[in-house]
Image 1 (cartoon, rainbow, N blue to C red):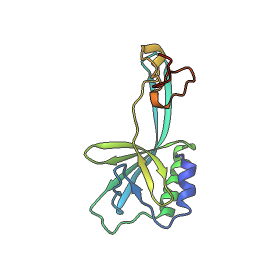
Image 2 (cartoon, rainbow, N blue to C red):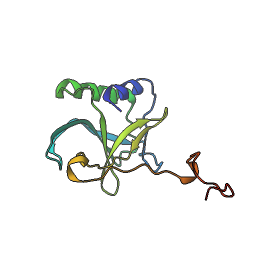
Image 3 (cartoon, one colour):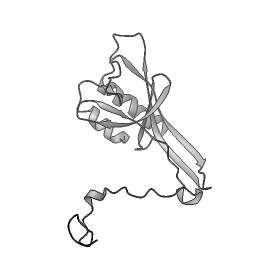
Image 4 (cartoon, one colour):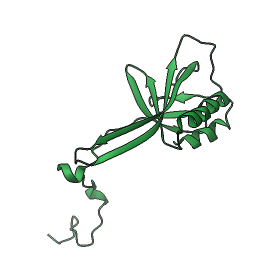
Amino acid sequence: MKLSEIKDKLNQLETISFQLPNGELVPSHFHVTEVGKITKHFIDCGGTVRNEEVVNFQLWNANDYDHRLHPEKLVNIIELSEKVLGIEDLEIEVEYQGDTIGKFGLDFDGTHFLLTTKQTDCLAKDKCGIPEEKPKLKMSELSNASSCTPGGGCC
């Protein structure tokens, strides 16, 4: 989800909720402690120099059970971050503390913002010898007119 998309969704909501990949909701008294831009400048295993930028939201729970972040307040925080930090309309990555700090993608189901799992991947499979995965086919789903069938007399 991009920054413009979350602002659009927030402008249509009365409350904010985030749902973890396991279905649990982030406690409603969460804080957004950071909105920022993360730039990752790196070389992949094939030697290609890459740059990635994301907008980072950090969610945090405190013992402040009366705290509720309202949608318009989060929009104001986002807009201030865009102005002061020069943040563009980038993809959002969310940090949330579970057993360790997790990094999540962000989606929306019409009610909750969904923290989605992220996966690592090799960006240079063609250069580091990782073979492409062949599609898995079920033999029962193949239809071939020249194939033998039981009792067909072709064998």
